[in-house]
Length: 62
Image (cartoon, rainbow, N blue to C red; front, side):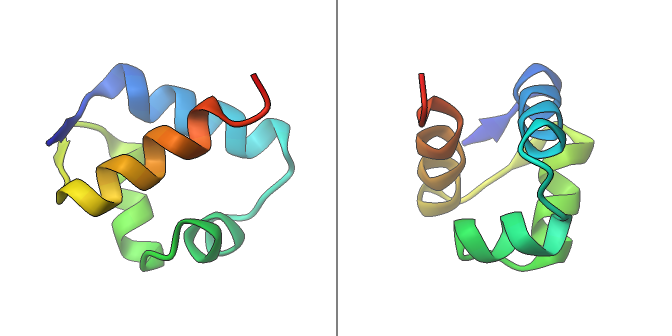
């Protein structure tokens, strides 16, 4: 499932707002830091589990 540049921008902004390092967020999402780097770069074709983890994290605290 494609993580678009818009979604990747939302991930970056939320991570910075919450003062999380890339490593901390990767651990929270249960993914490798290198995978998070791909997500934050945008246009990443993520497996369903990773896609769902990212989307669920984005909607937390809304």
